[in-house]
Structures are given as C-alpha cells and as structure tokens.
Image 1: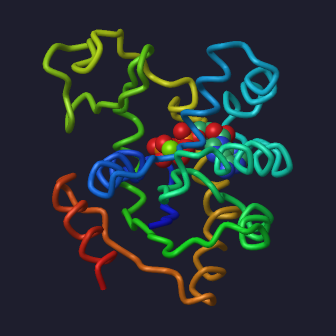
Image 2: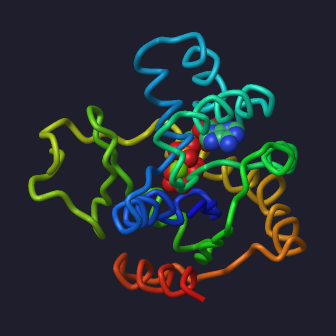
Length: 210
Ligand code: ATP
Ligand code: MG
C-alpha cells in the first residue's frame, strides 16, 4: 500500500500516519521529521532547511524532490509507505507522478481551520524522539516529559502564532491545489478529522478499504 496523506498543517496527519504505519506494517516517511533530524545533526540539508522552516516557509521544490527520491528508494519502502508531508506543492506532485513510484491512494484529512489553529497552538514536541503531544487534548503522563523516551517537551519554533498563520496561508495557496490534481486522477479520498484520534483512524481505515 502506497499512501499520500494530505492535510493542513496541524490537522493530525502525523498522528494518523503513525497509526496507519502500525496497521499496515509499512514505514511513515515524514518530511518534517527528516528535516528536523537534519537540523539537529547540523547537516548541509539541515542548515538550508532551518532558514525556511523557522520562517514558516517551504523548502525549495528541487531540494525536497531530491531528498524524497533518495528516501523512497531505500529498501524499507519496497512493501509500501505512508507519505506525511510530501508532496506539498504541484511541482512536487508532478515529480512524483513522473517517477517510477506508483501511489495507490491520496487521503485528504479535512479539519476546520479554527480547530487547526487551536491544535497547533497547544502542540508540544519531544526534543529527543519527536513524539508530539497537546497540552490539553493529548497530554503526556507527566507535564513537559515525553511518555516514550523521557525527553523534554518543547513548542516548535514554527508553532508560534505568526508562523502558524504563514504556514496556513502557504497551505491554501501551495498545497490545496493538490486536492484537485489528485481528484482529477481519481486517487483522492476525503475523511473528516474528528475530535477523537481513534475515531479518525477508524474513518481513515474505512476509506482505505473501499
Ligand atoms: P504537521 O506536522 O502538524 O502536519 P506541518 O505539516 O506544517 O505540521 P511538518 O510536516 O513537520 O509540519 O513540516 C515542517 C516544515 O518543514 C514545513 O513548515 C516546511 O517548512 C518544511 N517542509 C516539510 N515538508 C515539505 C515539503 N514537502 N516541501 C517543502 N517544505 C516542506
Ligand atoms: Mg507533518
């Protein structure tokens, strides 16, 4: 199964990607995690990415396309994968269509904008393993500490209010056109991102079975 997950930033795409990954036994390829890991490790890619991410901007298409071509050709992707965060622009989608990778389905997770802003504003992330939590809706057992690895929880720089606004604007102008692009190819399925994480997962699995 090769799945693209599409959603506005903060719609809970990453969380659903992890659930699907467990369910199907295939890896989640999250562009955000790849980029943040590179930033932490101070690689060339990380240095370049940091400038864009901290300002709430997208990494240039040609860079992202190259990174993903390399990643998707790794052996662990042979049985399938879940794409979280790629493609995010039409040129990225076109590059993927032109490659020899055949995607089966594009899942659009739809969440109202008020909800997205509320979620992003309360999101914290483990500085060690990248697991995400919400200070109200998905609290860790102990405030400020990661359940999984004990690392410290922090607010991402790009989750500051001004940056959130810019990320949403970019989503509307750059990423939303992909819905029509994949609709046209009859690959698109839309699921409502509900209150409860488990409810959304059930709806997502249901949409994938049809
Ligand atoms: P969430 O993870 O809650 O959905 P998000 O999707 O905005 O939020 P990430 O996917 O973690 O966040 O991505 C963080 C940043 O990395 C983006 O704001 C963008 O700058 C950059 N980025 C990630 N994927 C891409 C991509 N495909 N093309 C260009 N830039 C990207
Ligand atoms: Mg993401």
